[in-house]
Length: 169
Image: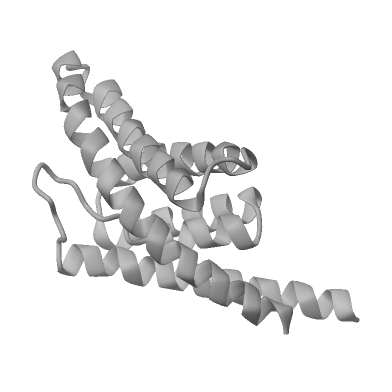
């Protein structure tokens, strides 16, 4: 009985994180917090990192994929969906591996996730356009990923702490 209750509680929390990540994605569509060159904060990553740290890689990947598909259908197009898939999947994989390295902080994991997300999107653009000159954009994406990764990591740290307290109850 208790296991069923815990599974239901986790399903509800993960569903809430899908909803939160969609709201954060929508906020970025409404109010583009752009740093120029198309860089965004990646607010939805707060939810993904939180799920990764409180639950597991599998749950974080599922929440991210559901968010990517729904936000792609609601706010994007085929290309934004492809770019988001490349960036989102690579980002979660990199963060999961980085998290396993106990010497890396949450902020470092977040930065690696942001940078790998940008790299994944750049890779998608390279595959689609076949224009190698697009790689010259990588330094801008690297700097942007570091800055946004730090910000998202800081916010995620607070949420993770609160969520772990809630789950103890």
